[in-house]
Amino acid sequence: MAESAVEIAITRLPHGADLPLPEYATHGAAGMDLLAAVGDPLVIAPGARACVPTGIAIALPEGFEAQVRPRSGLAFKQGVTCLNSPGTIDADYRGEVAVLLINHGQEPFTVTRGLRIAQLVVAPVVTARWRKVAALLDTARGAGGFGSTGLK
Image 1 (tube, rainbow, N blue to C red):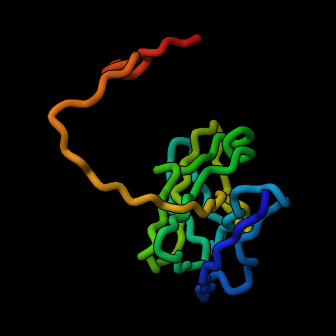
Image 2 (cartoon, rainbow, N blue to C red; image 1 turned 45 degrees about the horizontal axis):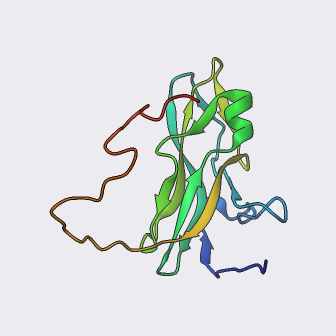
């Protein structure tokens, strides 16, 4: 399968000027690592949350979004993950990319400058158009909601 790429304008903000731009860690990776652009170490207590700057702003082309997602290693090893996940960055947003971290772990977690704190996944967006109908077509599941399909 052929690779496809979309060009995205990016700028480093003054407090992120010395940090590398987001990049894919491996050839097959879906997400690029986002780095913390904190000045001083930021300690997130157990149960607490923090908005962590990345020092970058992006201009996505129309028809695309960027999703901020947790890093599995931080979640597994420290219990640190992203709130509002995935967080969506819309094509018309031009502010700083920031990451909402929460510490679900038992110990304080320290965010240091350049720490890989999240992933950024760029994805196409399909715009929906509503079509009002009198009734929906039935399915085998019907209106069964949470847990309606069982555990196995």
